Length: 453
Image (cartoon, rainbow, N blue to C red; front, side, top):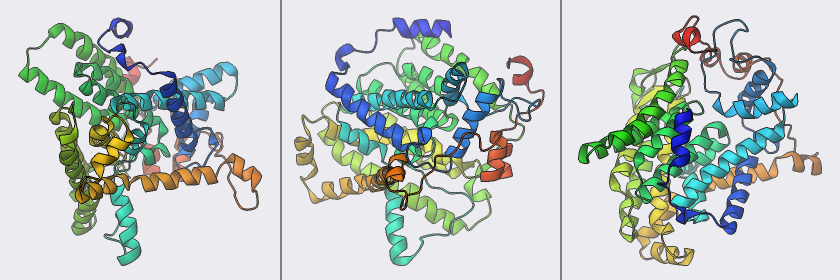
C-alpha cells in the first residue's frame, strides 16, 4: 500500500487545467451538503428503512472490538464495512458516537464524487444533477400507467428494476459515494484521453465499500483495458504499477468476501419460481425501455459533440445494463439494485456530455429544441428527475426542523443507533433470517486463519 500511495502522489498525468475555482467549489459544497442531508445520514432528514442497518453497524463497530465477529466469539463477519470505519474510529477516540464525524465523512465523499462528475460534464452542474437521476424513467411511466390501467405485471419475490443513483442515495449512501467517484473519474479519464489503467486502484479501493458497484465497474473497465492492450503495445511497467499492484491490494478483501458461511441466493432469473411472462414484461419495461431511450438519446445528440467520448466504453456499458439483470444475487436482488448504479451513471454522463460541451445553457437549449424528436427524447430522459424531485420535497418536508416547527402535523424521529445489539439482530427483526445469515462468516476460513488480525 505504501508503494501504491507513492505512485499516486508522484503521478503527473492529471492536468491542472481543470483546477476548480471558488465559484465551482461553492457550488460543489452546496450540492454535496444537500446530498448528505437528504441521504438521511445523522438523522437530520427523512430516513429510509436501510438506515436501521447503517446505524446498527455504526453502533456495533463502536461498542465492540475489531474485527467484527458474529456471535461475539464466532467467526469474522463477512460483509463490506469500509464506509463506517473512519467515523467510528474517530468516535472511539472521542468516547461516543459522533454524528458530526459521520456527517462530515459522508459530505467529503459526496463532494469528491460529485466533483469528478462535474469535471467530466465540463462544470455544468444542472447536467450533473440530471445524470444522477438517470434510470428512473420506467418507474415513472409504470406509476402513470398503473393509475390508468393497473399494474403492468405481477411483482415476484425479487425485482428486475434498477434504481437511479439519486434514489439509491436515500438507501445506501455508503455505496453511492464510491459509485460517484468511480463513474465520474472513469468518464473524466476518457474525456481527457488519460490511461484507463488509472481506474484499477479506485475500483480496488471501493471493493470494501460497495462490492456490487465495484464488480460492474470493474467488468466495464477491465474490458476497455483489455481492448486497449490488444490494439496497442503494452507498457509492462505501467501495467505493474497501475494494474498489478492495485489488484494485489484487493486480494485480502476478496478473501474476506469468500469467507461467507453461506453464499447468498443466486441464479438466472428464469430459474426461480414465478410467472415467466411477468418476468419478461418486467425485464422489458425496466431494462428494455431504459436501453431504447439511452440509445436514442446517445446517437441523436452525439453528432453535436465536438470532442466526442469514445464509443466502445458506452457500448460495453449498454451491454452490461442489458445482460447483468438476467442474473440474480441476493434475496432482494441487490446485485441489480446496486450493481447497476455505476452503469446508469456512466450512461447518464455520456448522454448529457454533448449538451454540456456548449458555452452556456442557452446554447444547450438551442440544440434540444431543433426538432420535436429531440425534445421528446430528452424530456423522456429527464422525466426521471420527477422522482428525484419528489424525494427532495419529502426531505424538505420531513426533518428535524419541521418536526419542531409543526409537531402536530409532522412526526419524524431519527432512527436510534442502539436499538439492537448488533446487525444480525437488526436484520432478523427488520428484514429476514436469510438476509441476517448473509453476514455470517465461515469458521476457520482461510481469511480468519491467515489474514484476519
